[in-house]
Image (cartoon, rainbow, N blue to C red; front, side, top):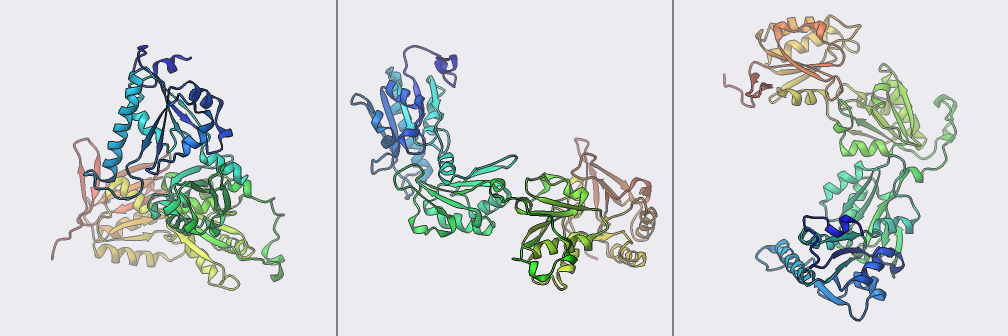
Length: 526
């Protein structure tokens, strides 16, 4: 026996006078799936403890029954409540906490008397198991060993014959008791998932699956490895028939993928007869940088896509997934990218157009919708998923300079004349709006920042705070604040966003030496 087994998991020292506590995982239900160690511990134990509802029947006891002896002392730890209400002064949680304390002391009495106590638990003792409440109260007081068991998750996947996760896929385990919106967000953002604790939560879980777009992938497993086992597509299940001991599984997408399709011919070479079931185009905003800026919905759309279309720099932010096809291009062919995405969807593909920041702000959503408004693409479903835009990311890094009314203007004159930009700068500045200036400069556009500074100084004080936010969220992130009069165009490039304060914007140095910029929400009366 190891030193850890002798001394326990907590601070309790080996005394030779107390018994030993075991948390024994029995597996998902079939007694033949109990581990050899679990059988050994039950055979050695003096006391067998198990939890049950007030009806007295214990699934854990039924699994281990063939290994119980007549001289075993059995401790049935009967819950005072399950899902019903209670008049306990501490409410439902108070009633359970009091029960756990009393149950732990009952077991402690056996341990103090030198008896070995095995608390048996279906599945794994420390995975949503009742044993864990005894462990928290006793493991620091007595030598303790936990015997892991096969979980219902593993059993469900085995019964379905479907891999749970492959390669870099992320498996998320969710209790069905979560609020519906939380379930939706987590289901949308993960690769594979298992939702447990169904029963009366099933209608909520099913709605969440449908709203997250995962219902077609979802499978249902009831009483895996036990009598009455049932498996089916989740969409086919009647909610009135679902017991607590059931799970829903979204298995590996990689494993489910069919063989790669042959290379596609250009759109001009395909006839209408080759156009099959219509797919979908989702324009996804990835935020200003990496995965930390992705919303759960966007993360899920990127994972579900069969084809990714986008500017190379933005596509590089999206992890490569087996089976996905990536269509990269430079940053000056927005219409061609949009047409490619829509053409792929025309032939039944699920396509994600990857856009930096928010796709609706100086980005790809407009290009896709413009092409989607023309024949032959009018009937193709198009969705736009928002992302954190550069202005909001930069403002958050600086403080709250956009805390009042503000305007967003692009200084690029590639798609609109400078005269229009100048008019808008004059109008926004004269209205005393804070400004977020996108695309301020590049290698081919070097004079716009200087001209914008001249125009703004006609309406703003020379010491108006200007935030230069570069590569926000990226490895070269920098945020500096300078007076408007000192704004140097040479320090601005295409990866820089400028925020110009209003007449009310404040710049304050705090006690820790950090500098914050904020614009009050109140505006003085004239």
